[in-house]
Image (cartoon, rainbow, N blue to C red; front, side):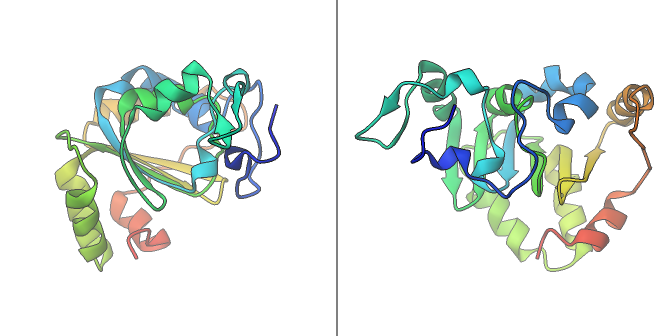
Length: 194
């Protein structure tokens, strides 16, 4: 269900997940229960973050948006926002995981909680080489997901047990290919920092 004026229904043209499960949730299922542990810096177009279809109800004409209790509760989990960057409580990512659109995105799980985006973003935009971006992620992030063009999801983690859990899970999924890639290879290939 989508109200014609609802911007949440607009997106990049990536595959819409309705009453199904996004590749993110399917491929990283072992990590889903852990998402709420961290505060996350999310970098993606707002349309990527879709909630379950039945949350899109109770249209508020004055606000020009749906106003269900679930959507209002999720909005409170957004701690800071700037352009296409959000700092969120981990419960936000946990709630959107099944229905997000698999499209260009980076999700950074902060090792230390932050209340604002400023500290991370200032350092991210100052990272003008893949090596500098790598150093920032290694220093500040427990976990990093990156989606490339809706076709490839990457996960980088400080803890090898996390990667082993993903490899083991993905190996059992039909049609999924898992390839090892270091964070430096990924940053050089896609240069998300610039």
